[in-house]
Length: 265
Image (tube, rainbow, N blue to C red; front, top):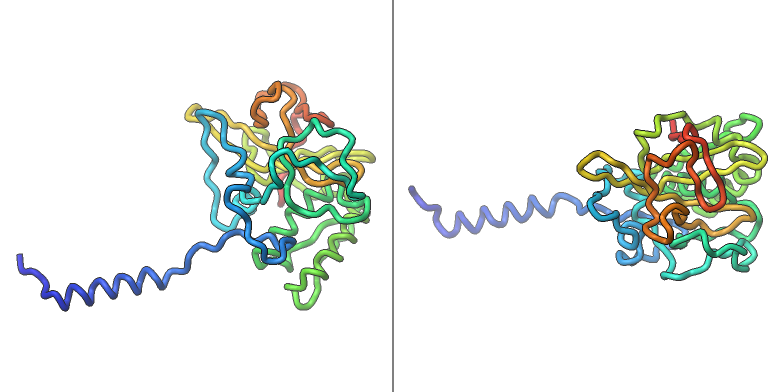
């Protein structure tokens, strides 16, 4: 076989290198409240909370809400859950990790509010700020419409308004019912009402037999930092919940009916 001359081979190598460099590297998920501060890869939800033995994380699309949730920055191990006042929450036995995101200085960012905050932060950070919209308790659509849409201060002001006028009752009506067997990252277990409660599915893993397990995030009353819940049935073991949890999903501070799973439309 005829060999290419050295100069031709060199040109081919340079061409291939140029082609590789022409493809942009995958951008790391953005978390705007950090004001540009990078996330330590060793302190993300996915890194700090590995799947149980024999399980693997379900595939996600690049740039998806699921990928973004798995990359959430966590506070150092052992961090307490703090209230909006800065005081520790009375119960420090319900969480395994605390998400490194502010809770504000008013008693507003409670359970459903934290779920909406995380969803909205992902939309904002992924260039879809115009899609940030939620229904209030009366059914009116609250839509972020600041100009420019990249104004993070305006976005945060809008979300405070959402927290004041929306909650579990409105969010439950807004989300669509899905089968428990299809649980996916980003889904919500919710009971609408006064009071009600909502927790966010932060991660999902499967084993070769098709069994699924999942992690849950919550805020609570009064407004407090978002945290990863323990599984009360795990006896201080892994915080992963199994789908065969019986007639109710029992979390440390609330129980949900099996039909409580919802998904963003």
